[in-house]
Length: 394
Image (cartoon, rainbow, N blue to C red):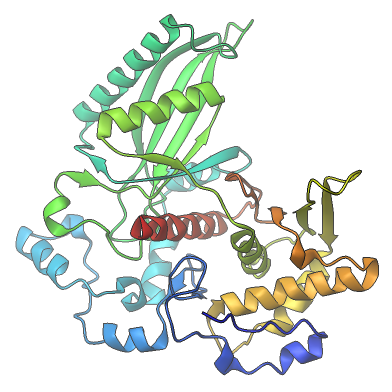
């Protein structure tokens, strides 16, 4: 498919771009094989269907706003059979906003636990025979502890001296959509080398935040549980042990979530528009191995300049943020760099992006800098969308 041309001229040329060129008419050729429109709302941005597809979804039955866990069996069956193709498009902004503002103090604290830590992002296939009853979670904790103990006897852990017991429990606050499973927190405690105090050596959070739709068929939902994404923080050896246990215990696949240069550029543009105490936008571009004496180019742009460019590109009348607008944003920054240094950054791979909200690199390393719980949920929702789309491709 022929890509939409990007205007790399001055900002006044950006303002004159026709809005009709933003939306593509085909689902194919976009980076994730999904419509390249993301919508701003109380929980952040997400993939949206094209205008043609939206007309089709209007023919589907509207989803009732009654939570699934409070419905009768007949109501649940009715809700599942009448699920529209794009249920998120049917949910009102007021309904979603009320879910966020009604968070408890425990949920707020859970969200804050994710901030300031360096996470490795993974995506998962559905977990088989996962149960959330207290007795089941205790059983899973014991089996994981036994698995770690067996690995310890093999001498697997070199950097971690004494990994101990594991604890698995529910983690509320991240499930903002009616199709979301309650998030899961896994903690592995132990003693670091030459230390006597026991601490959490490795922790993981499995979640789906505001799923666009449930990828499981109705007859599969009693046996499978879908967590789109896992964030793992801790030593590599313990992380690999945890991944191996998840795959064996629940017959699933845990895969590292990597981000392309285009995905990093999209996040850099999208997160610039979030309400934050803005810091400079830092972009790191890789250099080909043939070039000697330099390994990367660090490009830092003041927050005020980024926000001014972002507002020039964005239309106040629209609530959607598109792939085309993201391309214009990055093109504006790269054009400015070219005018000063005569280096075309668009020919180089973008390896790392750091904004006031989050830091992400191509290897899936992520760190949340934001102090806003709402913005944390926006990032998690974005990760959910990317993982869900990869599941569809697979």
